[in-house]
Image 1 (cartoon, helix red, strand yellow):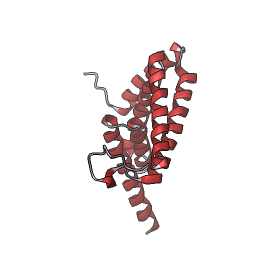
Image 2: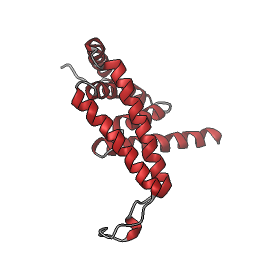
Image 3: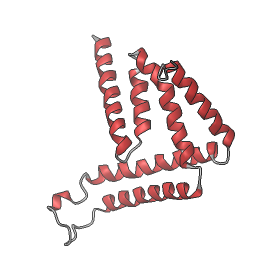
Length: 164
């Protein structure tokens, strides 16, 4: 029975991360990171998920490399981190509902302190990822070229590309 409960838990967590990751690809959030996490969890149960891990990992790293290619991208990313921190501080301070607020007051800063903590934690994680990406990829074309090769190799191993 213990094995069935573990399998069910892994299934729920894995598929939740995959669905949330797909949503976060178009919404604000770390979409590829959540997809990778979901596939990592599902890979413990399914071989098809294990084959898809490497392509997702390398595409996420390619996105990280592209995010630090130019100074405007770096500045925009760091600006986003500061906006997240500012939003978290605003949520934590929980100011009175302003008079100009057009909807019911219960919709002013929903989630309270939990939302503030999540926003600030997301900012810390985002900044750590920016620093990691900068140190690994900025001004290092060899690392980016190696990543391109890894993507092609991972796609071939995952049977995503068909050479007919």
